Image 1 (tube, rainbow, N blue to C red):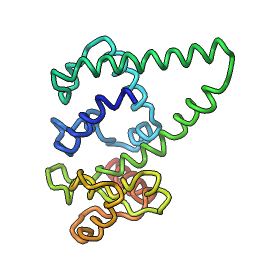
Image 2 (cartoon, one colour):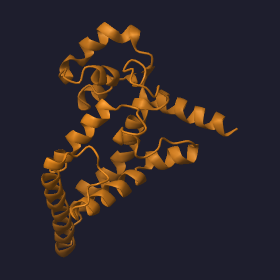
Image 3 (cartoon, rainbow, N blue to C red):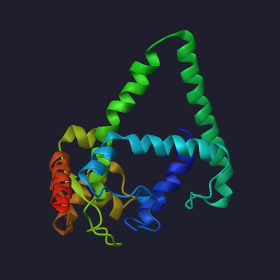
Length: 206
């Protein structure tokens, strides 16, 4: 929850500078150029490394590497990160002292198992799309099953979300009906998208 103080600013910049290599914060971690880099990204290891590094850095009050944070919001973000770090330490120490596997079973294990799935979804949103400001070409909409759309609040309609960020999640399917013929990257399922990404990386290596 405390991370939301910085995340909404991060996400605002991602929308404002989508696919801009100099300003889009999601491009701070370069897109995979090889199959090995793709596998590493899907594992979630770079995500966890970056999250822990940012938590330690920001907790110490160092935020110069986060240009999307305005000066008036930095203090709140630093304290929110300190609270988050303290909460993690408290939970981990409590679990060790009580010698209970609850933390591992209901928190750490789901996080570790869920990351590859989440990474495979997020990597599909903009990879192999245009690197310009055109929302019809720089973002992919992935057509998938209703359970995925339901649990992801219709985020598979990602091009629509980027084009009209003020539209509530439940209206994104209707937006899709109006503009689907104009969306360049409209693909069937995340498995197919990830296969295409790996295939392109494999061809580039040969």
